[in-house]
Image (spheres, helix red, strand yellow):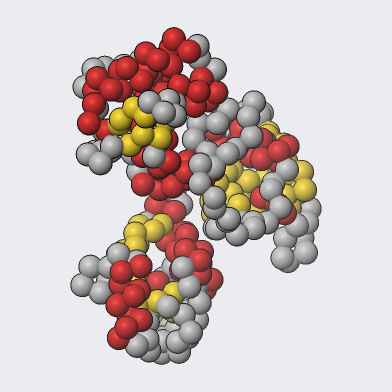
Length: 293
């Protein structure tokens, strides 16, 4: 395949993406999306036809290129399926001048209120610049006064946006819900200390291998359905996750983590429950109980 510039590669990716997922592509699609001339759009289509001629056919009636029966993914083969899914339902490569536009109808569950752009911006700058962030935070304990944290990553739980950080008040690494931060300011004249770096966050750096199985209480038919839905191998789905995120993920996936597998209304159960025994936020997982010892 010919080596292309980054801009042209993006246009060819988009061309194939739209062809594959909608079944058709036109010069107008490229012109509208990238703001290029008609001649440039024609050149892109010519390049694609030259490099993947078996993938599309020209419909002389509608003046559209349609996907062929011999289509084979060319440009998108190395792109993560999760990225393709996000692009399909949220829009691919949309800039700030256009509203997100999905290519296919898709209704997604509502999320909590989007974070304040001011708070989000301050937290993001602190993460990118490895800086201290001074915040006012609405804590469960009721101690809402100012505190300093050293954030290093955002975390999405499926419902909430968190920031993972070292909390100087508590002296530990923990999570802060972004929407509970009332104010945030980057502290440029104070540098983080070595022990506050993410390399020292044991829970963040430790990866767990969790073995998920259809719930033992389910019927044989439902177990077969779960095995198909979760793409299990020999009845097990291996989930690799940071220890710091395990509780969030298991709750999102509705996995029974009770010691006696009593939550039989849930579709999944964890086979190697012992993997969670020394994980701090495992208490967020459905039914999990800390062992007495």
